[in-house]
Length: 328
Image 1 (tube, rainbow, N blue to C red):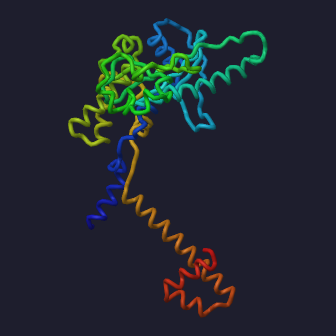
Image 2: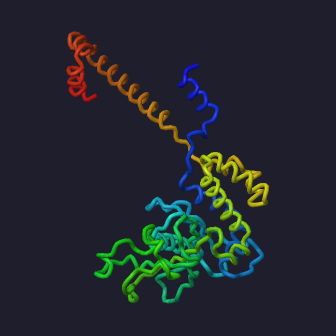
Image 3: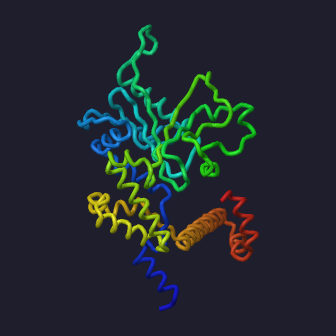
């Protein structure tokens, strides 16, 4: 058996050999963990300092797909007159307030339609109060609580020549205040504002919130464990497997990981075999080349151009000329 044969056999038996981390796995896992009302209510109580008991008090309003933008949000729900948008981020994005504005616009429009409110009447309509929370779990050092404002994106002379807005990856390490507000004067008289409250949920941050929401604390610990095993030198599949084993043994997301180990692993890992990818492209190229040649030969035969057919088999340049002539 040759070396190539051995590699092919290993690829078939152990497809995760070529796995790498799915860059969106934390986002997917976050939504997976808080898909049930009970867990989402626990998270809301922890963040808002409330003590709601009945999950049915909570109405899910998540936008699965905002058609004209092609965007998806993590979790949105209505409770006690509050319209909450919860998102997870593993990288810093100063444009979150703009995205929040789009989301809230869609959700409020849906709310108005559902309640059949007449926005053209002389009577004031009653709307839920929007709250936007971003749960941050990246590696940049952020404070426990910070803010991103839509007004920081409005263009004026104070912002045109600035480098990275506060909240970018490069600027995050220099952030000392508890806010991520733009430099210079904000547009306090602007017609629009949207505020995203960023909560750092990495291990060791927002301890009080973690104490009140076990699922959030376990999620943070699980992600941290994967990082630790990677730092110890384990490859990605092994680091994930060890982290899952460790968490099950130490009652961290234990029930979820026992019941859904395969699904969670699929969320975290993504397979990418470069050789297989290139081989597939070459195969598709050969198939397309064969199709063009057969179509050309068929046309030449139908037109009784036998001399041209013979020449095309011997002269590649002439064959290309015929491809263009027949628009193939």
